[in-house]
Length: 531
Image 1 (cartoon, rainbow, N blue to C red):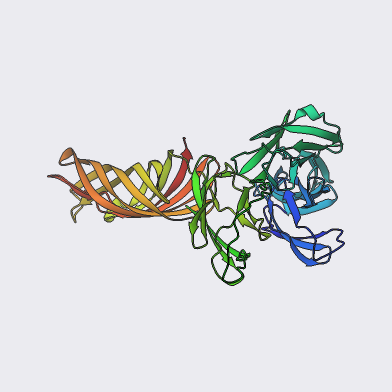
Image 2: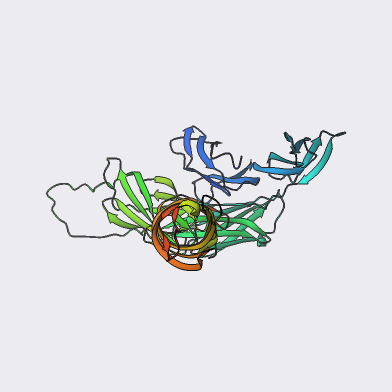
């Protein structure tokens, strides 16, 4: 259930003749992600499914196959992802409101005194309306309410095998499934683009399309990325990656003069990779489609020693890798270009030892380069100077190496008033002050997740104060002072919500007045990403 289920264990049953020599089982899904399948019994595999963050109902399409070569059988299965939402229904105060969505019923809930009821419901994919029942009057009233569900991705693809030599001879097969209820969609509406070379359509039937691809001989690329789209359906998108390896060299015959050896020489056996540690830097990786990160790997064999000379293959479900570089003592690095979405995994493989591992990519929402929005809060200062502050806020994230800094400015307004009288009440003096603190901030990001981040830093404030007194007239003056702050931000929509706690001292003084424009503040707001 989307919005409520963080993850789910999935059991996959497949035909399996021999357990020991069974090729690896592969899973690919159009929305969400699967962990690497784990064999728990003959013909049974378990995997963890993490659903997408979207909450509207949709159908998960899963490709299942074994790595047996280009003629491998690929099965496509589907399972529903239930969406959660709330219906706002106008009804007479106190009446009972319920709803029927497909075969399920929800409620009842009571309408408020203002004649409004909020009814939580769960909707399966394909259901376009709900029947609302309002009870409590002379008889039940039925209403048909449309459920506005955005279009979802109905496309899934798989490439078999996942790794191929760039020899210009070894073919691979690209399988595409477009789930539109068995309708025949012309093959020319399905667009397949390869980052290198061309694909050839082999067959098309009932939403399934099969393409043949042969890697370019002598290619220097480490992978080929296939992008699939459907004309007329902007939500239909799929992408798969084929990892390329160097072709096996032809056998060569070398004759050498006889050499007397003092003893038999046994070639050193290549170490078998058994464990790999992976770390991205920076982490999390900025999901903007243009930033680069470094994936550092440390490889250990079955004896606990570093593995050197491994022929590693890296394939990303989103984004792209540059060439793997060996750093010595079992350490390897590869540059990774970030995707423009928040879900990506990396498949690490060593064909020489048969080692494979799936690595999730830690990704974060692109914070943008310039954000602008309103700021409001409360400042505790001396006496009557405590009060609400309202203004505007600007924030500019700046990355320096693996660290993220932020440069910010805010302009707020505060005001205060006071009336002083003598004990007899015959003499009174009224005064008021308006002040406008302009603060500059330099922050350092302490921690960041996919959407949440924490920043702390220092800054400086310049405040203009205008003072008016019934006895002394009007006067204006400027004061300055330092500030310190800590803030939290949560990315949502086209920007982020933020909350900030700060402390500052900004005295403003003139001949006839003195005030403190700083203090302890708790403020928040929403910054909109401008670019």
